[in-house]
Image 1 (cartoon, rainbow, N blue to C red):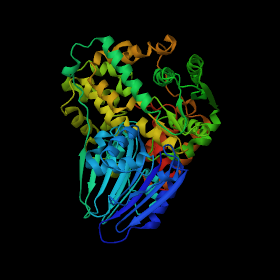
Image 2: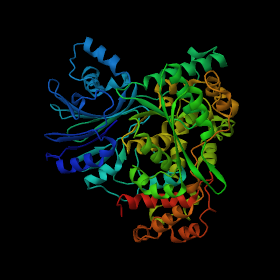
Image 3: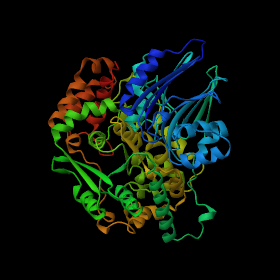
Image 4: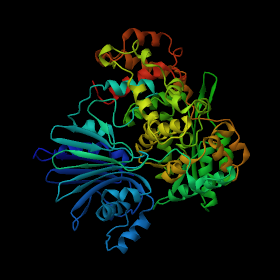
Length: 594
């Protein structure tokens, strides 16, 4: 819900208001319902508003509290804001709006930076203390809402998207070699704090940053569940775990209905989104709007799963909307999807989500989505093999299973000037796997996937593509209390039934068996996977452009080899290597990076 921006100066100069305005204007798609600016002394804030809670102008931002002399901008939703509002009112705080933004400001006044421990939701915020000059930046536990940073001597800028920072100017757009290494190792995932650009960083999830007037700062990670078995769960049977998971998911779905506008569901027909529909039906939700997308077949591969989404929609009597996208529309929509990306993302369903969001936004402003269940409940096909290794072998097993290619494989792809002299991606994984707080190899795998890889792939993807159309996506499987419960769940219960066993058992209580026991699906976009003609033409144009040759990131002989056989070169995970290379270059060119 919204987009925020701003600039803080540490050198005694006034902030560049024109730059803040440019950032704010670039965020217009995230917040089509309102625009606000505030500046005083060394700080300036900008905001674009998507009206979800308190539709009046009382909820406009930037929001100031004259008595406490704090000003803030906020993006997201605190689902328990009504309960917190009542508690804060009982403590003497007075409210002038019905918005969750005002609750965030009052909560900070009452509890300081520990206020985030009380928030149930997704959020990024910046609060300025007018008297002290201190600035507080915060991000939700699972990084559902983004916060990008560009720091130069004497100045910090921040925004809800990377392109907004580019609009402000003055960003070092050179390629970060370590981030590039990660991009090519983990199918385009670059975890916080890095981005593929040297001049832009991300506030990590579950982090509060306190910035002092001289520019120094300190970070505090306020949440990390343990992936261990807990005494309070001793003696729980498989049925007990099923009941606990279903109840926690029910609570998560109920929380995400908090809004002053209707809430729909993105329904793929898979277990995860179907569970959301079923639980909303159990809650008595009537006339629920559901939305599905499909694509033309290419290369003998089907591009839709309408059979299952239609089955669920009929079973629960939803107001169902179905979108079939022809292959030529995929290629035509590719550039607009890339323009919406804060960072380059190679997953085929980016275009699917962008096209679907365009249509959904014509009907509703808020949807629930099933992202995150595969990471949280071990749904991917590679988890059983990783679970069979010892805790000490977890890092090697992860690299052998998950990585697109080994460090040595990058030498033939990259120009020596952007090739790190060590295996930075492997080092990253080894450090994470070695950290305490995970009992088994699978526990360590799921911790890494849930708290790192997922955040900068599917979670970022959904935020970017939906918010580009002023559509807010809420993800109940990333409710932090549900994630805590899943982290404590014995791995064997998650691995049964081919993965997500405990979730499938919960599903059988509320869903038709045909939906629960179907083969695992995904968001197929055959036109990209098989390089349909128009997509391949766009790829050739990007890689042969003067700026691509001048950039010289990839060895030309490697690019020529890919282009000579577009569908033949695959990563270890089976992804199209040409698409991975081309998407990076298309993204750089689309955002004017030379």
